[in-house]
Image 1 (tube, rainbow, N blue to C red):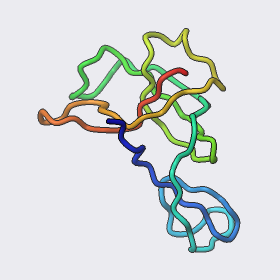
Image 2 (image 1 turned 45 degrees about the vertical axis):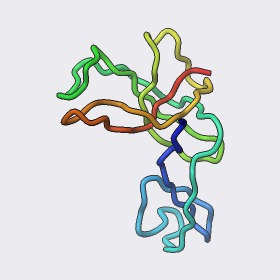
Image 3 (image 1 turned 90 degrees about the vertical axis):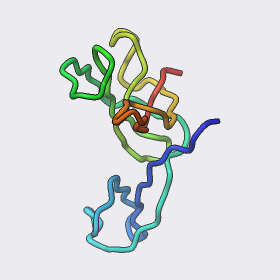
Image 4 (image 1 turned 90 degrees about the horizontal axis):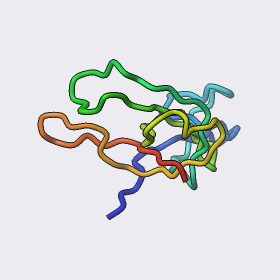
Length: 117
């Protein structure tokens, strides 16, 4: 069963600026009225890096982390499921899903996971 991506962004009703995570006031126009929006469509890769020195709780040698932008303008960070950086290129399309990213106290911790299309 595919889980919904559990990211909620906030769009300013006055100027349309998208905020993720939440801010009390719009960073662009300083108004306080927002509507909640969810990520839509595929994600496009803006930047990425490989991390080798991982904290406790990760049972992998390295992680590839990326910053992506969804079709409706929400930007977020997530784990990219690839074997090497050679398979990635800035601007490429990635399929997002909500899945386990590590295990803590024998329970899975869920987050944004991305796979090349």
